[in-house]
Image (cartoon, rainbow, N blue to C red; front, side, top):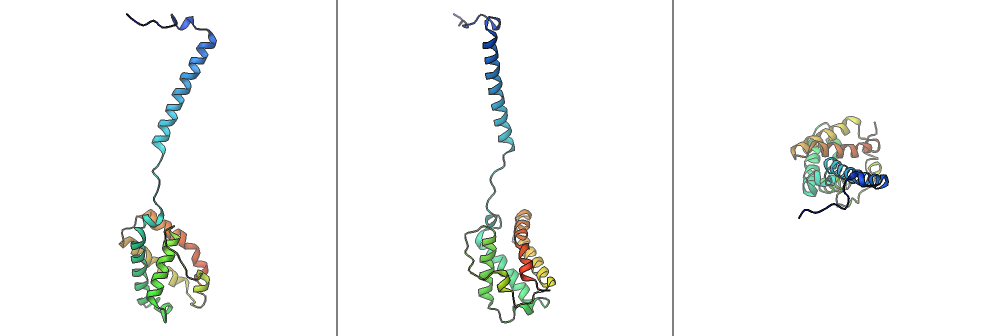
Amino acid sequence: MPLKSPFASWRDLSPAQRRHIQLAAGGVTLSWALAALMACSSTPPRAPLYQQLGGVAKIDAVADRTLERVSTDPRTMRSFDGIKMPYLKKSVAAYLCKVADGPCVYEGETMANSHAKSNISGAEFDIMVSVMREELDRAGVPEGAKNELLRRLAPTRRDIVKY
């Protein structure tokens, strides 16, 4: 036996009932459409920058290789005379990790204080950045993560470069 609708037809409804059904149907349709749009347009959450860089171990390796290269490069080596390289490598790695929102604790001086007597030139700073960029590439760091780290480090130039 077929089920009977409580209404014989749409025409049997009052104008207010019809309007109510139309609004409810429109609301359901709009809700589903918005949910579908949000599902399509939402992007997965990005990992913290230090993870995009490869984590603490890769940051340590990049800092180590970068400092090894610039401390032996004839164009920049004068800046490292008398510096305890193991301590500097550890400190720079901690600084990079901190800047990248990693779990590391940087206990060194401010960039201005630690470089106050070094007389770093703009050219020396640029060489350091270039070498770091190459080491980030060598470590397989994605372009976006590399650029974000360098963007975050860029303001230190004014604290480091003296001429």
